[in-house]
Structure formats: C-alpha cells, structure tokens
Length: 301
Image (cartoon, rainbow, N blue to C red; front, side):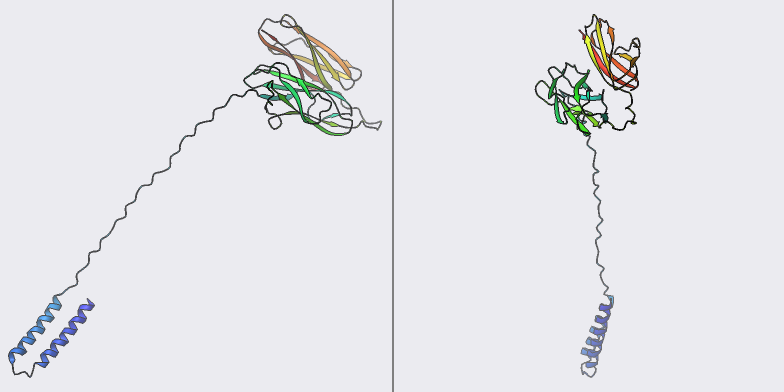
C-alpha cells in the first residue's frame, strides 16, 4: 500500500508538470488531451488494490507408533542328572570338634542319592586338605535313587595343635566325579577339627562328657536282622538313648550305659519283616549329646 501511494504522488507530479508545460500552447486540443491523460492515470492508480496472496497451510498428521509387546519366555526344563548326590548332615564329629593330638575318631557323613541311577561300585576318594590318616579310596555300598547312606572313615587327629580340614568326594563306577548338592562348592564334603594339646595344669577340668562315635555291626536279613551299636565316649558318665525305625514304629528303649572311664559299650536290636524295600534303624543319643548317631539298614526283595 505504501508503494502505491508513492507511485500516485509521482504520477500526479508528472501530470501537473505536463499540464503546466502545455499551458502556453497555441493548440488547445493538445492541452486538453494532456490533462485528460493525467486524470486517467491518477484514476487508474486509485482503483488499483493489492492482491492478497493465498498462503497454504499444511496440517501435520501424527502417525501412531506401535507399543512394544512382551514375548513370553519358555521356562527352563530340569534335566535329570545321573549321577548326583546330596549332603544331608554330619552324623559324627561336627565342624570344629576339639581333638587331642593323635586322637582316633570315626567321621561319618550322610548322603542321599538324588540322581536317576543306582550307585553300584561307587568309591569315596580323598580330594584335598588334611587326610588325617584316612584311606585314599574306600568303596561305597549300593544305593538306589532316593535312598540315603552313611559313609564313615576312621581317622587320627594330627600330632600338632591347629585347625585341620580334609575334603572328600564321590566317584562313580565310570570314574565320574559326582556333584554334591549342599556340599562344599557343590562337589565335596569335609571333616573339620581343632587339635589342642592336653592341658598341663593339674586344675584344668576334663573335657565335657560326650559320645564321640557310634559304629554298627549288622547281621542277618529280612528273616531276622540284628543291628549292634558300638557307643564310644570320652570319659566317665551315663548315656541315655533310643532307637528310631524307618517304619515309624517305636522300639523298646535300651538300658542306660554307665561308663567309669572313656571306652566303648554295645547295644543291639532285632527286626524281622517280610515287607519289601529298604529298612533301617537310627540310634539317637539323648544324653549327653542330644544328637542322632548312625544308621543300620537292610533291604528285602
């Protein structure tokens, strides 16, 4: 609009100049024509109007983005393992048991066959640490899947004071090391003792009375199985105990064992049955240990 105003001013000035220039002309026709031309020019400029430009507007379109979906992951399927064992408990000599130098003892572990095949021809082998007089290898009895077994090794405490630990493993009849669930690093089980030199002071009290081991001697079978438990103590005292049977029955309570000094006494129990399967006795020491010791078992076809 401002541009048109400037043009209008320009043409008005030009028209006036042209008209002025023609004032003295002797030809009135030419002067009239010039004035007419100037008036038409001004009228044309006044009628002119700016043309608005059409501006196109673009509307943005939002494209929906698909949301991620959860793809279900299949659950892993447990693979049956053969062979495989599970450590159940230390039947004798709990970790940190105090021994005197050169003291003999029987270490017993309870294992369970958690694999899919029976143990036939399996072997206990010393792995590492302190053997403490134990054998390098020792055969293990037959154990079916799901059954438990007590493995025992006779050992001797070292002559010097200190802490000692020995690791043991199970080897299959095909010379495969058996994994041990709940065992040390999933592969071994061990014995751990502390050896202390005997006190030299005369007023030092003797160690607390305790059962140190229980071993079994078994005879007979389904028609008459007899288990003899050999109970060893470390000094004078009285031992109270009771039997536990695999079928849940309550056997008679054996008489108390009275010891005048460290030593071993025996007690036996019998069982006659025709039921097929594996049957066992456990001996539980109520006093002084309050601990289950050992297992005697037999199998009927």
